[in-house]
Amino acid sequence: MGDTCNSRGFTWLVKSCITDSCREVATSPATNHRRHHDYLPCFTTAAQSILSLPDDLLLDCFSRVPLPSLPSLSLVCRRFALLLDSPAFNDLRRSSGRLTRFLLALSVSNLGHLTLASLPLPLPPDHHPSWAPPFSLRADLVQGAFSQPRIAAIGRSIYIIGQGAALRYDSWTGAVSRCAPTLYPRKKFAVAAVGSMIYVAGGASRTSAVEEYDPETDVWRVVSEAPRRRYGCVGAAAGGVFYVIGGIRVGARPGEVDDEVARSAHACAGSLDAYHVRSKQWLRSRAAVPGGGCVVGACGAGPHVYVLASHAVEVSFWRWEARGRRGGDWIRLESPPAPAGKLRRGGAVRFSCAAVGDDRLVALVYSSAGCGGQRGVESAMLVYDITAGEWSRGPDLPPELRRAGCAFVEC
Figure 1 (cartoon, helix red, strand yellow):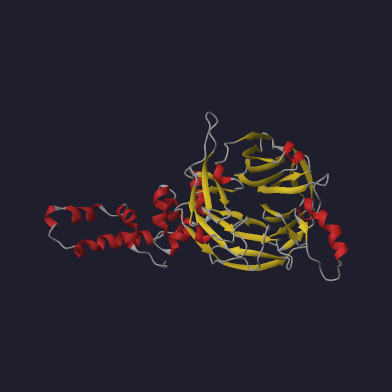
Figure 2: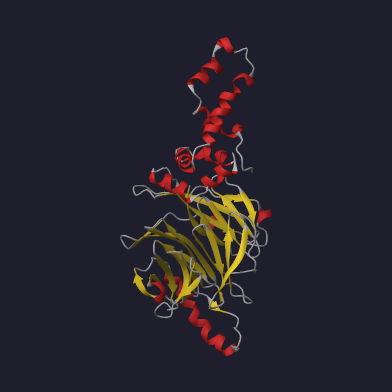
C-alpha cells in the first residue's frame, strides 16, 4: 500500500467534490465528442482538494461513510488506512451513533479448524437474540498451534495468539492473516490490549519476560521482567495497567530453591501482578483473592478489573479496587449463576470473559461433570450489568463453539 493516494480508489469521494462546471463539461451533449483527458483535470483538481484536507476534516468525512464501504476506502492509500485505524475515527463514529457493536466467539477444534460466530449488541430486551450462524476459517492457518489460544481486540481487529503463532482477524472484511509470533513460546499465558498495543506474560517456565506487540509494525519486543513466572494465568487491562492474574508459579529465580518455589506456587493462584505501561513499572498489588480462590477468568472494564474465582465448590466474583502504587482491595460482588453444583461431582468449569464497553461484562461458560460414567456438557453465556450489579442469562452458544473464547468489537 503506497503512501500516496490512487484517485481511482475513491471515485465516489471525488465526485462529491466535483464542481458543477466540471459536471456540465463531462455530461453536456455538445462536449461528448471530447476525449476523456479533456476534462480529466476537473477530477484531478477535485482529488487534490481532498488530499489537501487536514486529518480532522478527513476523519469527519470518513465517519459518515457506511460500514460496507469502509474496507474499500482503507485500500486507497496508507494515510487513509491509518486514519481509519485510529482511535479518533472510532470516537467520531461512536459519538455520532454509527458504530456497530458485536460480541465475537471463537473456538479452535483439535483438528485446527477455527470457528467464529457473532452476536449483535446491545442485546434486545423484548425478544430472544441469537448468535449468527458459525462459520469456519481455513485450517491450514491454525493447524497445530492454537489448541488454547488467547484473544485480544484492538478496534476492528481480533488478534488470536497461540503457541508460537498468531493471527489477525479483520471484522470488516472477514480476512485472516498471519502475524509475527511471540518471541518466546507460551501456553496458558496472560494477554491484554492496552491502548494500541498488546501485552503478554506468563506461560513459559524459562523466562519471565513481558512482551509488547505493535500491530502497526507487526513486531514483538521485551519491555519488562515479571515479578513471578506464572503458568495458567489470565490477563486483563484497566486504567493503563496490564494485570497478570492467577495461575501457578513455575521456575526459580537466582538464589531460590525448589522448596521455596513449591511453597509459593499455590499463593499465585489468586493473586495478581500489575504492570503500569506508561511508567514501565510494576505496582504493589499482589494481594490474593480472599478465601484462597483460584482465578479462572478476568477482564477490565473502565478503571476496574473483574475476576471470577473458583473455590472448589463455588464460583465467586470480585472487583479489584486499585489504589495507585499502594496496591488495592478486593470487593466481593454477586456470584454468577454458574453451574457450581457440577463441581461437586468431579467436573470442571472454564470461563472466557470480555468487557462490553464500560457497563457490561460477558462470561462464556463451559462446564462438564462426570456422574456414573456419563459426562454432562453445558455451555452458556452470562451477562453482568455493572450499574445494576446483576447477572442475567444470555443466548446459548451454538454447539460448534464449546470451549470458545470471546472478544468485544466496535467497528
